[in-house]
Amino acid sequence: MKTFILVILLCSISAYSLAQEVKGADDIKGLAVGTRAPLFTALDANSKAFSLETSLKEGPVVMIFYRGYWCPVCNKHLAAIQDSLKQIEAKGATVIAISPEKPEYLDEMAEKSGAQFHLLYDDGYKIADAYDVNFTPKKTELFIYNTVLGAKLKKTHSDDSQRLPIPATYLIDKEGRISWRQFDPDYKNRSSVKDIIAAIDKL
Image (cartoon, rainbow, N blue to C red; front, top):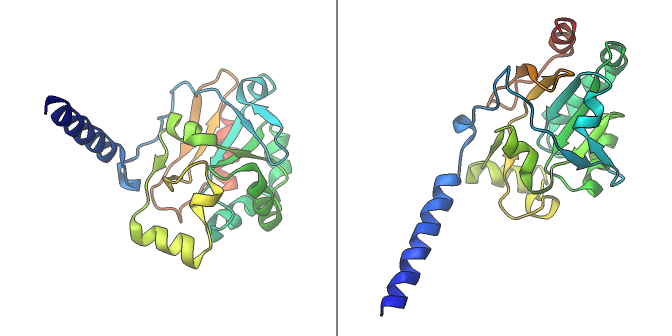
């Protein structure tokens, strides 16, 4: 009897913990300017490793979180970044874009947006969690994403949680600190090339 009660208690605690971990977009704050940027290594579409630490030795990094190839706003945003990529790189910066989609789906985003910069796979949502941009969409939103937009999040992501990142942009300086960010829970609001270049000029 005691064993049965203990099992029930542990299950209840686990369920409570999981419920506590579920955060909506409005609950997420993102890492603040001035914070040391968490370092990471991630795979690109060709399963080649990209190291943030190594890249920062060459110059600042513009890091963009995006939801996926199925997102029209993400496509438009990354296409705009690509259109001005040479201007950004002329400032000595490297551009990377991160999503929870597996490497085989990154090519679809490259094709839709024309992106020729690094598109990276956030395996297990580790990077989004480290930068505090990860959230769980509402059921109605998931229906639209999966059914209407064809996201297939359980298939394209590393697990079935169907979490997504706030589409934030971070500028990380050579010292490894976040010097600027664009962060808005409203997925329609994205960083502009003008603001990114202005932020790089202030480094």
